Amino acid sequence: MGYWQENLECMSIDELRTLQNERLRETVERVYKNVKYEQDKMKELGVEPGDIKTYEDLYKLPLLTKQDLRDTYPYGLFAVPMDEVIRLHASSGTTGKQVVAGYTQNDIGIWGDCCARALTAAGATKSDFMHVSYGYGLFTGGFGVHHGAEKIGMTIIPVSTGNTQRQVNIIKDFGSTYICCTPSYALFIAETMKEMGVTKDDIGLKAGLFGAEPWTEEMRREIEDKLGCKALDIYGLTEIMGPGVSFECTEQSGMHINEDHFIVETIDPDTGKVLPEGEQGELVFTCITKDAFPLLRYRTRDIGVLKREKCSCGRTLVKMLKPMGRSDDMLIIRGVNVFPSQIESVLLNLGNTNPHYQIIVDRVNNTDTLDINVEISADMFSDVVSSLETQEKKIAGQVLSTLGISAKIHLVEPKTIPRSEGKAVRVIDKRKLH
Image (cartoon, rainbow, N blue to C red; front, side, top):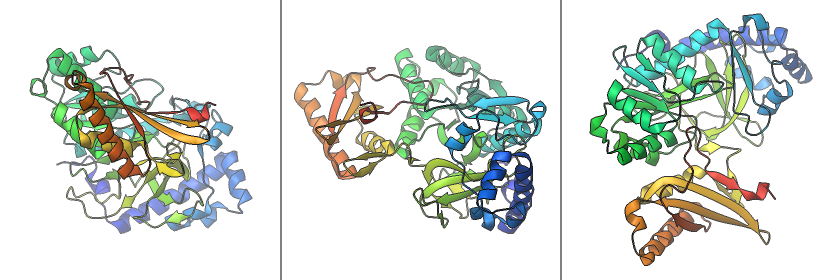
């Protein structure tokens, strides 16, 4: 398995810390000088750039949240003049003002390198064909992986989202060997292939890089089985860069974080206290090589665990385990913390149902209710009612033993839960709508 930048991906921890500390000092100095909003926040805490000498001093800096980005919308956190910004991207803005990120030419180059690392870790070479089913546009997904594939010299097929039957034909006819999209869209492609009579043996996919939404090990097995390729996770967020902040190698035991570009911490989401490596907490990223939009200590809301151990691929970059969800996605139902990913694991482990589901939470007579709509396969739909009721009870029992709370399970016909070409909408919390 190759590397894109072996000297940086495999450096010793001492070399890494020296590089991080040097880049951190320079970035903090530059942000303090050029970003008034950050300067004011630092002054409030009585912190000056000179106080930040190493990564161990990060805790002294203020934490940034999405609200800070909305308060400075659109360009208040940019650290370079706008005539140096050659590209803007933005988050979807589904929960308020969208977050706007800027890139200089140098930033685009670094982004490409980060994604090239992810692709080479998946085994890609210049002889491969990269099928990009992430959206192109303000969303960072399509362009990020595109830049990485371009650096390697892969043949890029920039399909973007939509028209899934056409996508299947392109994968088959153009000889796509790598694909990237959301994991839920990968399963939609597999479902469409089945309807078209196309099998995994008719296509030549070697691996896929799937991200932009949380997904489980069970979903990984489902994708690998149906598409006949290795399913690897890639992580990123608009605020930090886009896809390529971290990536899985073929060991599939966590995502290597590009630590020469981003310093990562885990904090207690309630107190903000920094936690030791290995403890579950909220991931916080500091950008140490970005020109235009170098966020310091940005709270991602993603709940994860960091692991620094020897990897068979030879990379020494710390790994983050698959985030189990976001602290703002976590549902509190009858006092119990529930992540949608826990429910997904139950459903996929039991089999017999399609990996399409929707969780509906409501409040009736001051008590939380939990309903889960689950699509069944076409074969099961023709079963007698009694066997469907048995299946509902089986799922309900498994949900109760996993989560510790009861749920009403509704098996629904195939194709009744809306498909998404982007991030799947898994939860409808009606308590927020009342």
